[in-house]
Image 1: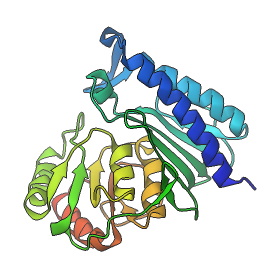
Image 2 (image 1 turned 90 degrees about the vertical axis):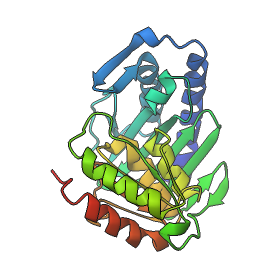
Image 3 (image 1 turned 90 degrees about the horizontal axis):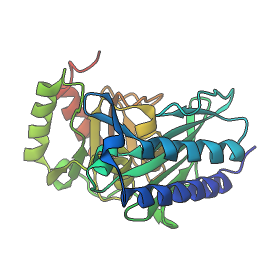
Image 4 (image 1 turned 180 degrees about the vertical axis):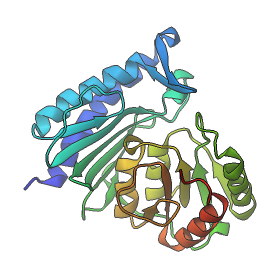
Length: 268
């Protein structure tokens, strides 16, 4: 039986150490060493270096665990435990020298997320959650917003950057939220969007076309902070990031109803 609180302390140390590397590299970043994995999908030597650091340190922390890491530094699969890692969520922001960007690390026990850390290097903010242990920001307990309706909510989202198949439906949905909320924000990092829902800065977040490493740690943060997370059909288990809604309990039903109406043809 592993101690999840202690595990999170070690994950935090790994994230902060890697964050220092990222911030150091940001001061002399060479944009010519950026590669394209796909349309508007960038990877840099910083992503790869950061992931290597994380894989090495987390591998020592829990040797039996495997990895689901964005850049494929390790393809080891654990029988019971697996790390889900995004070494630099918000690479496009990083490439252009703007914040936020973050390190996102989650630990899965079979199909369940049991620990998660999101570290926003620029603001030196560490969001931590473990199963049944609550959600925390720099050592302070956090909770989702107390807002009770969409009209009082700030909604976060992310624009599609390569899959434009459902863009028309997405823009209809965006227009609705522009008219029926206190505003829309697009930060460029799903991990941070979810962390901000967890600490009450945003009331809701929705997006499609993400991956497990973008959302795994953030999903646990929101749930441990008292919020809800599902796909566009309301399913709350085994979320891959392909569809995601995260919000306060009070706002969740409004978010789900509206997103499901506008994005009902989004399912592949």
